Length: 193
Length: 108
Image (cartoon, rainbow over all chains, first blue to last red; front, side, top):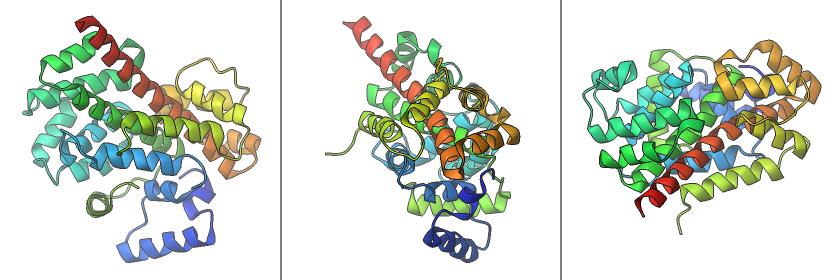
């Protein structure tokens, strides 16, 4: 990861915590967790609280559906760390073959029309926010989404617009598939904030 | 009462504008550049924040090293990166809410 102090921790307590968590887990603590520990006086905790609500708060979308949305945002933003991390969580609630079909092409994957419409909305939001307008919201509503469903999907897309950019700009190390799986269990138990 | 997404978005915007170790004009400029606005930032900040906003996978070691050198510390460089990324995220949240409001207006 770029920026050595983010990698090793900015306080004695955080440096110790990073070492202990890596030892207990049996693998290098992922860079996403190191970023979450860093510069706590700035915007990170506020981002963590919004991410927790977007990903684990009350919603018409399941946790797995929201994790799959996050993986898709990561795919559109060419962020391999976040694709791996959030696919690994999504498959705890969605068949891995379906998750991979969505990642390959959500338009043809065997998913509900409701989820497909949410993905279409957040794809445009992710790739071309200037082009998003009433017609996009109306198309999602025509597929059965409520205003709250659209807001909840947009919140996932918004927080992962931030997280994927941090991951790419800081050049997060990519864990192995087995390490992603183990980290997924921790994120399911502990959440994001 | 539970925070709504809009409350979280505003809390995040406020943290960028009102906290951090770097100059507030630089934080605000980085956030605007990440959102795709013309923030008139000097180099090397302009190149890095624009790249983060448009295609973050193209950020280079040299861009980050140049900002680290100009800003003086890892913490300052981190805040530039985080501010630009947050600008891109809030740009998308604002676009989604504007689209929903337009759709509401059209249905009246």
